[in-house]
Length: 152
Image 1 (cartoon, rainbow, N blue to C red):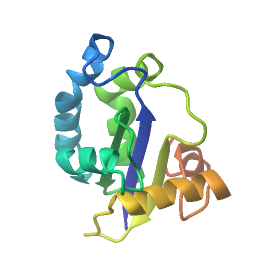
Image 2: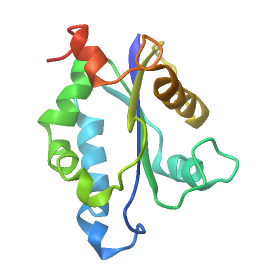
Image 3: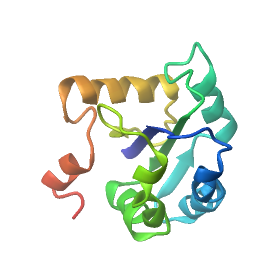
Image 4: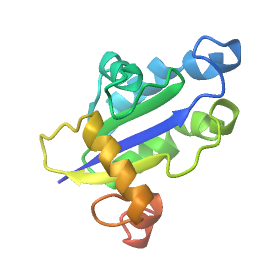
């Protein structure tokens, strides 16, 4: 099994606002680091993610300030290393400067069969499941993985 990851946040300002420049100017850089990281398998392409975030019929949209990522990794340790032991950490630590507070989880993880590429509907369903039912083997976050000893 591989590990799917979906995170979402609502930006404090419009995408082209200069107050978001440090974040928006580094998206390609951080995504390139992810793609080169040990354990990276796949990421939903930016054009597909943008469509999922802005399409009125999408389970994620429409919200012009939504920023999200949907990716697949070989295992929890690989994703954790990218998130907290790469340049990504620098931007993660500044997330409150760019993202508005929101109720519910911002991240959901779940296991997928090797070769599976989740779509926006599956990601939205897993996020809703986590918010509604709490962590389980069907939808979970970092704390659940720590409790199981899969990450530090």
